[in-house]
Image (cartoon, rainbow, N blue to C red):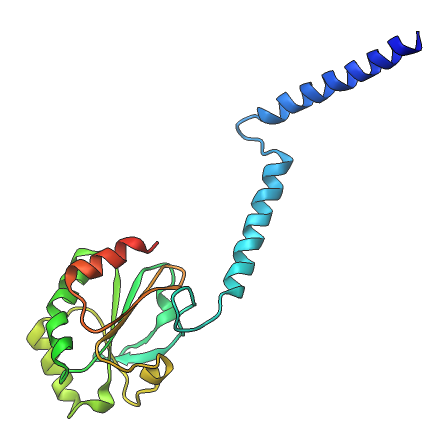
Length: 195
């Protein structure tokens, strides 16, 4: 008799476990399970923690160092203003032949794709600001030309060869670095690999 009672209790518990499992697998469309709520909360917390944990630096996977410069038009621009957009940061000078070679491709890239191009001119290395304006007009550049008059941003990014480009994703994370001129196809390839 005791065996039967024990078997009935075990079967009842097993039946309840199966019933509970089936109901938890099929929540109503507007109802989140406890596990989903915990998972969503943990996901939000993980994303916040991850954003705080990503170091600022110059390596792929680092958060790009923020900077603020004036444009040729006299506007103040910060890299962080473009969070949520993919950004190409290009360091260049008018006297640099590879920089000249990549500018038409960079303009085409800017026109064809949903990307922000920030062309940081090493203005302190130029003969005059007028050279930068003439260069921009000659090449018909429509993206912002930023003036690094004291080379502070170039130093921040440890710029050695010109041109140097950084591809930064919509979260502000460096996804690619290129030393030397890029052609249109390489720009598009790196753009498509970013989020």
